[in-house]
Length: 110
Image (cartoon, rainbow, N blue to C red; front, side, top):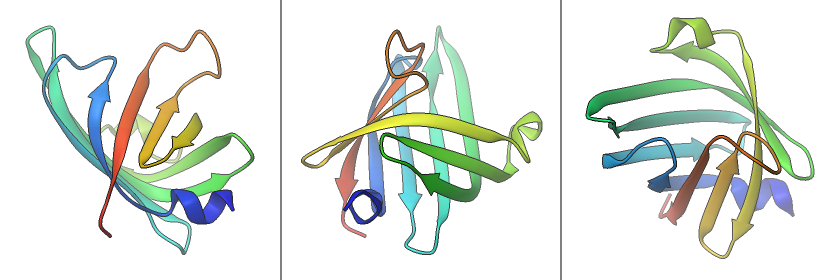
């Protein structure tokens, strides 16, 4: 079942917009809550993003309903992400094809 397969803690291993010192964790909880934390460098600039809220799943996408964020413009927004799960990896993109970003996460013990 899709909803059960995404539940858990995921460690960021690759992000198309970050090129150095990448770290991150995303957690999807069984009660529909989620948290995300990403840090890294893009073109030499340090970037840090943390947000939490709720998520809604459909067949190939997940919507993050952001309630709290270090990026205040994102609060009370919905961010649609397309996803694939391949064994112990979760791949999130902003579009199903010709995406502008891709993040790859590896499942961790929860």
